[in-house]
Image (cartoon, rainbow, N blue to C red; front, side, top):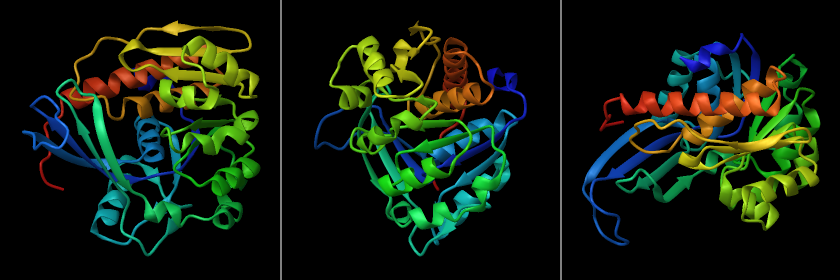
Length: 295
């Protein structure tokens, strides 16, 4: 397994954990129509997914998130326990667990998604600023933009380890704009990078983001691979061709590999390669996993 190549690391992931409800259509996608297909349920959320990949690679991982109070929340907490993800620094809320619902076309591309993140919205900057987590010696800290701007700013101000961030979505990526100079690495996809830079070419996007202060950029390009850049090196690395049942989660796996590379002090190219290895392993793994049709 590619992920076994990292030594044990101490990692903190801050951001979302939710129940993923993933619908894979067997019929061509048609707006407003009912499609045949398969539905599966699994733990998700960007920070939680990153924590999972790192934990399975042998890292010691803490996840700081907002925990719900319903049956789904208990299932999510149990899944973390089983995977070796500690929730010591997470906050308990009165809301139901966050849920993310996505519909994929027969090629595996996401066509629409809806998320209920009310629990995450209750996570406060004050809670983060007062957390004992930031007195711990982590090798790197991962942030996702499911956090509010205030929470992201609080975490950025509190963290002493290298910071790696994921914009999460077109809507949420703006939350990171003012924090870019504090980041050791940023992993946007192409449309998030375009929103932050107004550029459409990955090389120009990366150059613009470096000029905005981030130390290294890794732009995920789906099946085309990743464009990486820092002050010393840049380039496009192709993705390994692997079978898959959908691309959901591949970007989170890449983010985990990038966070591991940053924690180990790898150069940008080697970090990008590790990100691709994590992503390929994830796609190979889900291609071999039977669908689970009930939560």
